[in-house]
Image 1 (cartoon, helix red, strand yellow):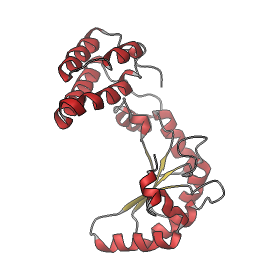
Image 2 (cartoon, one colour):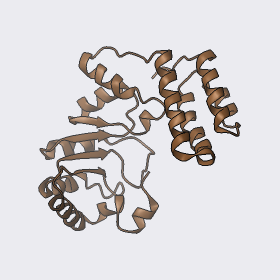
Image 3 (cartoon, one colour):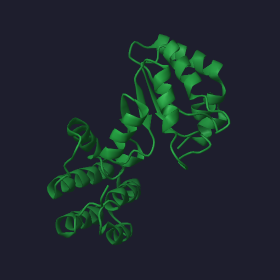
Image 4 (tube, one colour):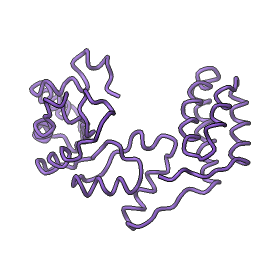
Length: 228
């Protein structure tokens, strides 16, 4: 989500309205470091100011090594159709790698977007929430083109429990309890019978209870993933 704080300080998506400033910033950053610099943009500030091609060319000329594009304007946020056609035009206009981003939530969608836009690769954001295995699935699907493997029950158990315990360890009891509710709800939302347990999980008052109850659910629950 475009940060309101960044927008108020001529940063983030707000810079799409100031191409000359974008050029100065990018050139300064590229000159200041010895590692490759990448950039992520949106298609424009709003539907009346679609300037992704202009910004992309500025980025390439400034020495940016690769460009990621979310196929919506800042004004659209995450609502409405993704402008894959705009991403395609950007891909045709520059020679550096382009990563397409926006509503890519399955291996098939990733392949379709690459074919539609001509992008070098895709960038996954919300599509990976609760299913981090999507990256391996996309690689497998792009390599073979017909199918991809779903993670086993044992693999899901290991991923979820490792994530849950890591949240607790990093954030501590109080904050970890709250953050775990959010992250676990994404996992549970991918299971056919995950919603009732998610409501119960969110009522738990200690990280210990979260671990015990999640382990029980993963061992005894109906771990059937929803169709992508």
